[in-house]
Amino acid sequence: MATPDEYPQTSIESCPRRATIDRVVGSATSRSWDETTENGIDVTDTRSKRNTAEAIWSTGVRTVDSQQLVKNVVRREGDALVICDETFRVADINRIVVVGAGKAGAGMADGFEQAVGEELVQSKVSGWVNVPSDCVRRLKKIHLHAARPAGVNEPVPEGVEGTQQILKRVASLGANDLCIVLLSGGGSALLPAPADGISLDDKQAITRMLMESGATINELNCVRKQLSRVKGGGLARATSAGRLLTLIISDVIGDPLDVIASGPTVFDRSTPADALSVLDKHIPLGDIPASVRDVLRHNASHSPAPSALSNGVSQHVIGNNAVALEAAAVEARRLGYSVHSLGSDNQGEARDLGAQLAERCLAIRDQAEPLAAPACVLMGGESTVHLAPTDQPRKGGRNQELVLAGLDRLFDERIDGIVLLSGGTDGEDGPTDAAGAVADALVVDSARQQDLAPRDFLAINNSYEFFDLTGGLVKTGPTHTNVMDLSVTLVEPRHQ
Image (tube, rainbow, N blue to C red):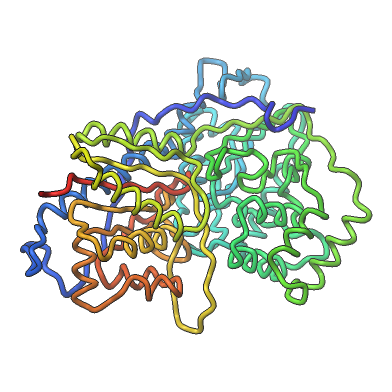
């Protein structure tokens, strides 16, 4: 049996087609963007720099458009169907069943139908893909199922119903059938199938507590897999299809196949004992539902070693954060910026990353040798937010918190010429309707006029309200892709 590292993967190529992403940037109602403020800010110039940062960010997101990423690796060539350099004779295929889950699922499914062509879609293709409710649209033969409401990144009963439909479809497949699995970020919450003896409510409670405690995505997925019938290779074990190919848009640092969407088609090495260790680390014993604890303890004592998957299963990463980051870098250079890329593997507390990013910007701006050209600092990855104890209302996401932390460090500096933007490439940042936030001199001026201190909002993780009041929210709606987060910071030379 091949290990995850030995599974074949496609080469990752930039997307030649750019989808349209509608951008809405919040604005404070008390401001006029058409005039220089009384504090001497050049509003037109600052708005232009903000628009440039948004354009660079959007270029990165458009390059990982989910529909095109699938069309890059799936094509019909006469009597053959080519998927990630594997060739199948159409005449030898009985059925093609497409299943999956994720925030990019709608675009991926649409791209698959377009790539294989009308005749094959109508004669052999069917499927079911779980997506957020605001991503549902009608396709020809693949059903898109609303498996959770928009902005609710946890499993709900509708997701369980959809997963049961997926399991029913893959269980019906035989040796002459082809199963295509489409996975992308958010797939874990969109593909729930609680293990026997565990209720969805118990699983929701555990997931929520782990997320609020600052558990890493690896720790979260370890627990999810041990509490699921479909994750950790469960989906692959449920089918007898002759071939199963998984097309993946990665939302995890390093693209670990067993972590993305909790690896429903990947052999899982984690154990119930590992899941118990994660729970012990993050959640007080008395808060763990008894059913969860009992099932994990029983399985740790009685379950055999995980069984290997069939050799007919393969995984293919077709897009990731590095693709988006490189496209953003190309666009920044085209616009005349010197690019400083921090790579795609940035992780840790959002407020720490934001403060570090601000320090880097100041160091670039204030270096002894004046900047020969404006700089663009690019950063990809995924941070975490540790919620502070409070009884006050709050709202936000990791990108908004990162930007707020950066702004807090810059608040007492002269920041004209610095624009800091960070957003989730899926268009969702935490349980909010914003993709992220942007901070610049206009946001600072608005905050000062309203006597708002970033530190007060940062202390209780209330970043959304701060940027809502100051005009710094970035809203895109669903982008139909998900490759973690992308931060774009512009730094102009210091004016003498």
